[in-house]
Structure formats: C-alpha cells, structure tokens
Image (cartoon, rainbow, N blue to C red):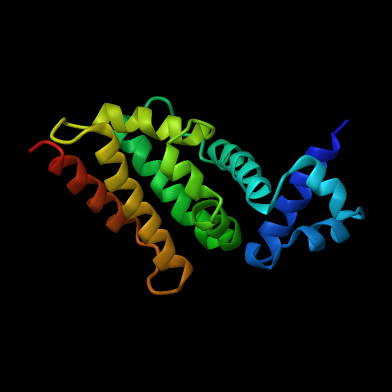
Length: 179
C-alpha cells in the first residue's frame, strides 16, 4: 500500500506528464489530491523539495525505459542514452522539460550528490570512454551540456531530432578527449 508521501509524488508526476510543471502549485496539487496544503507541507517543506523528490523518481523511471544492451560498447551505450532522451523529448516533452530544467535541480548540479542513479550510470560510461585529456567531470559536463542543449532546441521547436547529428557529435567529443 502506498504511503501518503508516495501518493503525493505520484500525483505530482501525473501532473508533470500532462501539464507544464510551472503551473503546479502546492495548493493545486493538494486540490487535485483531495487534501489540504498542510498535509503536503507535512511531507515536503516546499515545492522545491517535492520537485527534487519527483525528479529522482522520474530519473529512475526514465533510466528503466532506456534499458541498454549490455553487449554493446560504452560509447554505444552513451549514444543509446542520448538518442533515447531525444526520442522521449518528442513523445513526452513535458516530462523531459521537467526532468532537465526544473529549478530544484540546481541543488543537484551544484553539489553533484548521488541521489540520481541515472547520473551514476552515465558517469560510469563517461569514465569508460574518456580518453584522459580532461577529467571525467569535465567530460560529463561537455556531453551533458550537448544533450541538454540539444533537448532544449528540440523542445522549443528550433530543430528536429537527427540521430546522425547526435552520433557525430558524440564521436567528435570522444576524439577530442584523446588530445
């Protein structure tokens, strides 16, 4: 049986998938859930904390959706993740927008804590493909900046997803990490 906290997170996820997360307030969530805002604040001190917990849960769900063939190379696994995120941005743009751009993630990006299993999986792949001219953290930043930037351009309708561009960019980044 789900706890109240789990039900709140699930209700927030349902909202985020169907509506812009910026439209979600604690009051609206409480109304949708059929409870008072006091119950929400009993479990989450504010909306940022709720969004952070929802981000963790959604990243776990996305990681499961992006199951990768264990027999392929680390580079091909990274490529598969990048392509999977691009395809997901076309199918579920609101989810990707939240997962990559909600303000609660500032805490994650500033502290690099390991609440996100998906981050740990990507870092392991980064370590395997990094040729050593930059640190794994720097290489992650380069690759993640490309993925986030490309997803943002897709979400904003500036460009269409082009798998060959993703592959070529990743190849160039890996070659660049050799120098």
